[in-house]
Structures are given as C-alpha cells and as structure tokens.
Amino acid sequence: MGGAIHAPGNYTGLAYRAGRVLQWLAHGHWFWIDTADYRMNDRACGIEWLSAPVLLFTHSTRGLFLINFLPFCFAGFDLQRLHATRRPHAVAWHWMWLLPTGYNFILQAGGIANDTFPAVYALAAVDFALRAVKSRHLSPVTCHSHLWHSLLAAALLTGAKASNLPLLLRGRL
Image 1 (cartoon, rainbow, N blue to C red):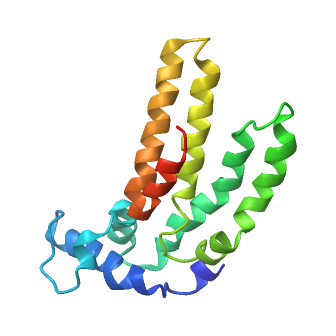
Image 2 (cartoon, helix red, strand yellow; image 1 turned 180 degrees about the horizontal axis):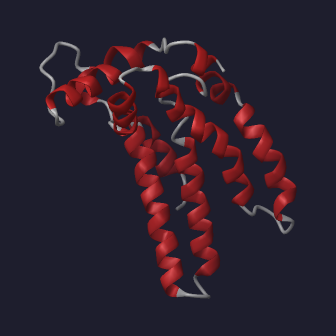
Image 3 (cartoon, rainbow, N blue to C red; image 1 turned 180 degrees about the vertical axis):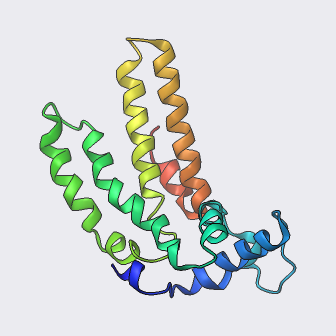
C-alpha cells in the first residue's frame, strides 16, 4: 500500500536511475550522459529498461514501485514450482509463504530500489535448470529449451544489477 499511496523516495532510484531514463526518453535513444555523476553511466540498465515504459506512459515516477511489487508477488509461487523433495509441496509450500516475508523483500516491495526484483530471475534460472536435468532423458529438444531458458534467466539476473554476478558464479547451473 505504501508504494501506491506515497511517491517514491529512494535516493539512488531518483538521483540517477529515473534521471537517466528520463534523459533517454527525452532524446529518444540511449546515450552516454555527459555529467559529473559517474553513476549515470556505469550502472547496470536492467531496472531502467523495465522502468522506461512506466515513465513513458504514466509521465510519473509513482508507478515505478510495480517493478518491485509484481516480482514480490510471484516469488513465492515460483518456489512452489521447485520440487525439492519427493513430496513436492511439503517444503515448497512453506517457503512459498516464508521467502516473500524476508526483511529485504518487505522493505523494497513498495519502493523503487533495485536489490530484490532480480530474485525472481534467480528462482527461474534454478527452476529451468532443474527442468532441464529432469527432461534430459525424455526429450533432448525440451532439455535444450529449458537449458537456454535457464541461461537467459541467469543473464537477466546479472543484467539487472552487476552485484548479482557472484550469485551466478556461486550457483551450479
């Protein structure tokens, strides 16, 4: 409710993320911004590509909280798809409700920070990797499709925020 009622107040989101998207929209294309604030040019563009349509169509920063809120809603349901045990819903059902109540998720679900929205990409990468392992004997085409989807989700994870790269290197996809 906080994201819908209050205007965004995240410093980094307003100082350089929304600012550079507005610059790109004003000029009609992506470009290097000539400024003393180096953050305008050296940060990953994942959340900016997602926020550009919101800023373009609403002409306001108020709707930017949806970029965090929608993945927050789906993070728990992605966990249910991960079949961790022989009884798939035993573990996944509890984590489906527990993970989105984590401190970082709760704080950022109604804001415009870019720390937690890539969590859905991480869950999707693991889910597709597990599907590829499971389907490798059934159909090579399906296995390769799931593998490519897993790699795409991992690429989106690292493209959303550069500090997510260690998460990808730590995983065994």
